[in-house]
Length: 115
Length: 116
Image 1 (cartoon, rainbow over the protein chains, first blue to last red):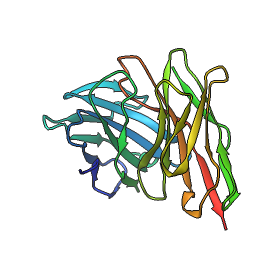
Image 2: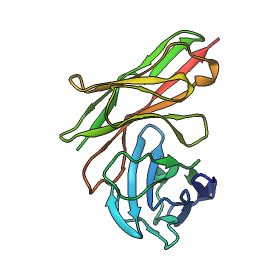
Image 3: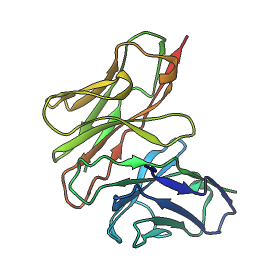
Image 4: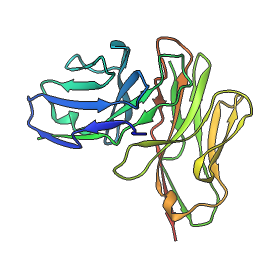
């Protein structure tokens, strides 16, 4: 069974540009989560999507946005890139929107470098 | 809101020695507890989780953790480590609120380095 897949693996963008990262969840999973892992800042929750809807959002500016498609895949868009957006972006998926407890499975991540 | 504190940012040990990685949490609601491992340049892999029941949880690769509600701790242990256990370990919690789903709040991570 395929795990959570993310693309691209690496992405280099110039400050001010837009970046789009993509994620395919495990088959049968309807919830997708995005996390940012920046050097020295740990793992920070960005967004949670379930059944096509944005359910929760972390403490990030509006230029971080995304969506979930009918097949439950998701994309994360980062507009007006800043140098500090350079990080590993991890996508994760889980079953449903049940309250807690469902195991979240992570992809290998997409490295975004802003120069 | 919850928070997770991993008390050691780096833990160096020798091969075949025992190890304990410490994790404390705070939350105003009941939580579920997780430990994940991240090998270099990879995503996170679940080691073990505590949802309910026995406070001693066994996970993959010989790791186990004990939930202590009174001390709000969830320390990770392994009786004998291998070189291949060198990685970053993250403690995480998820709460029971419907608005959170299975969203995780992570600690800052502990880098375990196993030396020969």
